[in-house]
Length: 501
Image 1 (cartoon, rainbow, N blue to C red):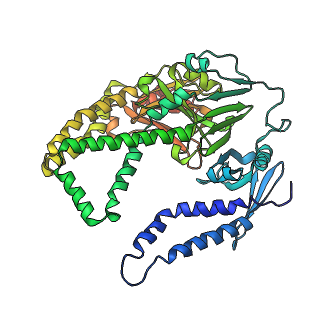
Image 2 (cartoon, one colour):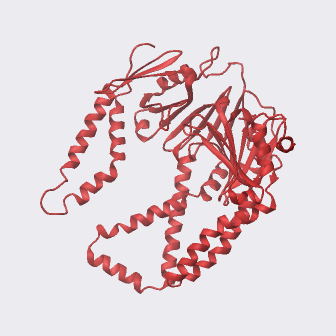
Image 3 (tube, rainbow, N blue to C red):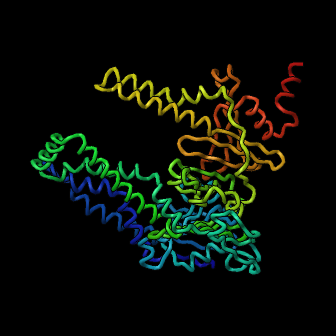
């Protein structure tokens, strides 16, 4: 175990293509634009960059060595500046195993290890390891003493949450090992209601906007002339067709990304697996989870489905805003019981205290005020800009929706707080008191005259942490929650009476 090892030699090829992908835009610009002008041509830089990437990939593989034992992982790397990194077992927050297309060609996996205080990037990333080797490292860093090679007591029995339990909420007693999978019907509904269509549509629009550089001038002018001569109805129909194509692409991307989604609980380990082309497996410790967040998309709310995210010190992904998607599609009726199979200290279905009526005006102004200002400017300086005023009632409705969705619950006996708010998606977060890093209530000058305040809590999540806020609570309620977090023996009202005396 103490002998120095290197990654699989296929790491050279994987690192090479990874660098090409990171610099694909500059390389394309060099190829397209580099030789268009007279005189000196920059196109010779293209093979120079390719050779440079290949050489650096070879040296990175050659000088990257590691050893591991039962207590720590030791990594040495660096060509000119030698670096030594020690990853102690007790500091590991998450263990992420993925298998992209290149890894699958060689039967390898990529390993990412997150540690407490590791920063925004993974503390360790090894792009090409044999599966057995990755499993050995995972076993050494994550398993508890006295467990078998799967990381749990060998007497534990595994139980799978059935489709009937997922739909009806009926459940058997929870054992130490539980497995949940995303049904194909729920995956399809998830893909159909995906919010990624906007990003795909924007990408298609940006792609079409660059076509003029690659087609002959007369063809481009004839095409533009055709569109200018076409009716508005035809142009609208074309936009609908492009939007439909973007929706189909978004469906395909969602199916590829979240296909074969599975969650397993083995002792204290939560193992989340997903992906068709790139298979990803993330391992989290349950006792390092700091908050559970339920998100309900407006597109999925009519179907009564929600998504569940967990916040932890490691394991979050950039596309999920630093969080980890635990359950992508869960019916409302079985939401609480399904979550409790995996994380037991985070209640999520409790009656909420609504926001005070006097907060409604602030929500309406916050939502409709900017829209009204933009519409007013458009009506003064843009032809037909007055039509933009039709967006003001929509913004007012959104403000009312946000106000009506806001709320909170405080349970002193179970020692947790629930906060619910909405921007477009409804978000409800459950945080135990001992997981809160910071609790803040803030009051602006305008809130002072209406006895309102903002309240927020911060938890440890990746490197930067995560903050959740409910705006315009009653000031007494905000102070009461803050006093609960501060372990104060008296309520805010009692304290204020004492100060007045």
